[in-house]
Length: 304
Length: 283
Image (cartoon, rainbow over all chains, first blue to last red):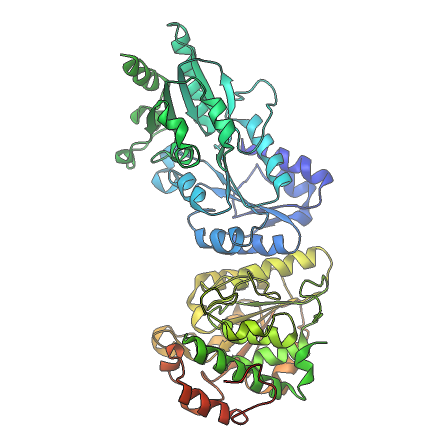
């Protein structure tokens, strides 16, 4: 996903003079392609995220569309007030990019797990919050962010995530994307964990259960009517979120509570009790019941 | 025309900014009068004599950029922007009242001419560095000026930006530190020592000068100077908190206290008489 992010941004920068990439001293072997093509629009701000974020605001004032780039919580929590006051209050076209959303950095430990970021970024007024599921959605998101020209947060996986879309979807900020059709059961998810939802759909299809899989690359803002259409006819919705708590579910509850009144909602999220555990992303997800077999078991249980 | 130029000198302009501020704060019963008065001379010299601006258009594309990091000294900036001609002077009389456009911390909303909303300390120097870098990358010759308090130099974000600006040779960036020596809950010496302060900026790659922040000629000369060797400029302006009103000078109390009517009357007399033809409203 991070490679596709840089490729997409580079492609836009070929014809658009505004994109500007700032890193907090991370991105070795990833960002060089942008740096080499656009040295005048690249900056390593050093290991100083507060300044990096303030710089981005200043560069936006000077006419650029800056993207700040770092790992997990560094470009968000470390400099949250700069994002709130300098970027969001002024509605500047700055995109904060976090690599390693959720527990992608597995055994690196809790410091490197971004598990509160979506809830916190979503709380900021005027912040567009995007968590694409795969490289295809990532490229779409980058194009949409530049076109929108407003504050944005882009949560990416780490690297090596597979494509879940066969072709470029009709991506619009605020609308979910349906990856599998289904009538009564639905899994709604954001980010690379959508891949687990698809694996579950395959497993349950073998039992004759058709699971609708919805990818939510946008957590804020939502188009309420697009949400209503996405959940049409669903009786049981599973909100699969690589996060503490369920910011996607909460965001839908705020924007269109009528949807949740018509169906049973099942929140699936990372267990807070596991924060000291080390291991691969898949291992950590399995401990919280977010591996495909765990999710499938929860769905079968709900069907009685 | 820049309204501050109507004053025969920057000293006269600064005296009027002090009067405006006292009247605003007496009426609104808000804090930070001492923080405003210490920087009156810096502001008057900048806006009257140094900044390249168009008083008819606060967004003029070739303007120099002024960012105020010490956002709590909002009253005097708003008075200054009203005097320049950006803000309707009527709004000064409504400062901090219910439904006012102008509040206790510097905000862009409702205040034409303000470039950056602040209020939390340590924010403007990073933004100024980014703006200065952006102008350099675009080949522009506009300058960026940031006024900080000495107390807010406790914030690490300022030193991140100082290191960055020195490393990147942002010679279009100038920081002016209003060193009035008193911060929110004690003197700077007591709370967090900054000395040797000039040397710290030099060590971070800046051209740093120390001067009397109430000496207009010295301020003008320092602000108009272009640095050598591609360095950003830092002016350590030694000032007196509450400067211009003897009862308020050098006192922590006047970081918070708002003047009573009697206090204000006495202060205005000290600053040029009980009534003044350039005041924007009569009390």
